[in-house]
Amino acid sequence: MNKYDIIGDIHGHADELHALLEILGYQQGSHPEGRKVIFLGDYIDRGPKIREVLETVRGMVDAGQALAILGNHEVNAMRFHAIGSDGEHLRPHTDKNTKQHQATLEQFPDPAEWSEWIYWFAGLPLSLDLGGIRAVHACWDHAALTELSSIGRLDGAMLEKYSRKGTPGHETISQIINGPEALLPEGYEHETADGTMRADIRVKWWINLNGATSREAIFPHPPAGPGHPVIPDLPPRNLPATSAYPADAPPTFFGHYALKAPSPASILPNLACLDYGTGKGGFLCAYRWDGEREMDPAKFIATHQRRTR
Ligand SMILES: [Mn+2]
Image (tube, rainbow, N blue to C red; front, side):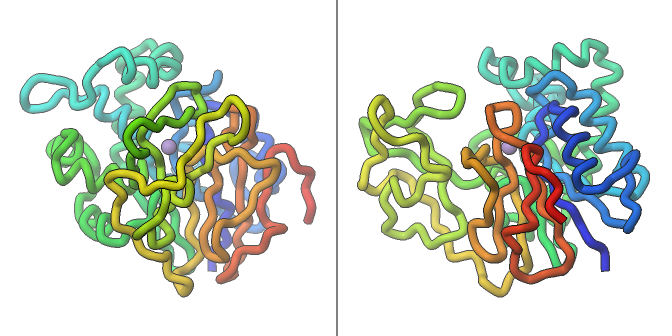
């Protein structure tokens, strides 16, 4: 059985990636004990060394030393660069969308080179179910993943089908790469990590949210206390239907949520988020998986930790 080291969102932070791979025992992209890496997506759009991150990830995938899935930033990049059948970009080049993609645009001024990377993204899967272990960028939604399992490459007509905001296809793919969202009650907003005020919140998709208050549903919980907006004990609007993540499901790893915590931990015995906001004052995080059904708190490895075993 393969043993895997699962690594969360990197976002152009190649130095942290190389430090983490070294802690995990990888030498020039391969492990002496034959372990492999699973990368959880979001390789681009921030950080100073996006090209180096992509070259490391792709190099390990090509050499059979790693598996990589798509994050919302890669799918957004594909949409940003693709032209739809109506002649418009699948992701409109608004100020907001351009700003989100700015670091990548600056670090890849040659469109021919960037096209190559877009083509590579199109060959990556949206999720992995390896039997003993599962990986997805934001949300393991069985129904959405079943619908998406037949699409093959996410390019051309498939990309267009899953790109148009407001279409069922877009909802399906967004569920996987962005996770479900809701809205705070009328008149309430929260402060996002980048300092903007928003009414829409990410929610805990692994519990039954039926009847949950905004405070119970929001994930992660934003900073609380003086100077921070209050998350009310009132039901959010448009709360999605969710159910408890099955306790008998294999260990499942996701990224995306930029958690703020001094050290990593699992959410459930078989569920963990490995995105701890590297480059946003956090750290890059991995889980060292050896086939166990329940996660071991000692096997979360972060760039700010010394090797412990
Ligand atoms: Mn993400």
